Length: 300
Image (cartoon, rainbow, N blue to C red):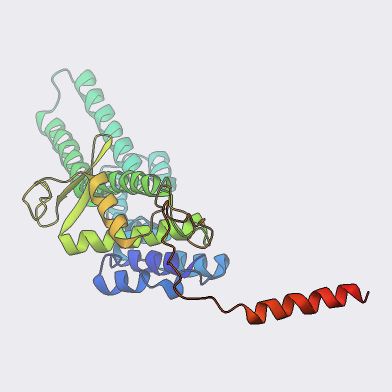
């Protein structure tokens, strides 16, 4: 794993990946080709837990769910004993590890007893029936409160938002990955990572964010994502135009038709200037050299 990718992943754990200090480090050219062993890097990254990731971690989640649901398990068992619902039913409830299933079974049992009372007693003993009906209603209310406290609406909305952000990031990565970079001496992954860093830095500087709208990427105002991003001329800018400008100014993209200056051929001007010589040209040394060469040939 490349060092910039490692730093970015670690920073993301604490949502600091867009911090100017982190962005500046990731944009440094001298760290782009430094490698960290994948098993070491992944071990460190996977071992870090933020508050948000801890909420969905199976071990942590199991621990706190058990603490949260234990009082309800105890209350269910007390209800079974209080209303003498039978040893078999008590054993069934005690062996059941699912709190929500226990509530459902208790409600079914109480409804069964209520229906039995109505059938055997005609109209039935109003006080007895009312007691069981009240108990059923209380237990239904407990179930509703339990669901709301353990699986809040905000958690569902947060999961949906994270999913949308993952798709958005994939779309951005795919667009950048398809570009042709000027530096062909490094891998495509390194070029893509550098481009990502430059894009984040530009977004931070311009107070803009990228959002996914349908199947398109749009630029929005970072301070109010409901508003479109406006440039210095107060005009909206498309995602492609913004990224093209950022990468063009950074000179990381290959220029079409650009040739290596060391291999370019030199074409002389159509009408070269040849200066006129004035006076008599001194050819004495040249004539002497010619005569010497002729003499050497004659002696061969």
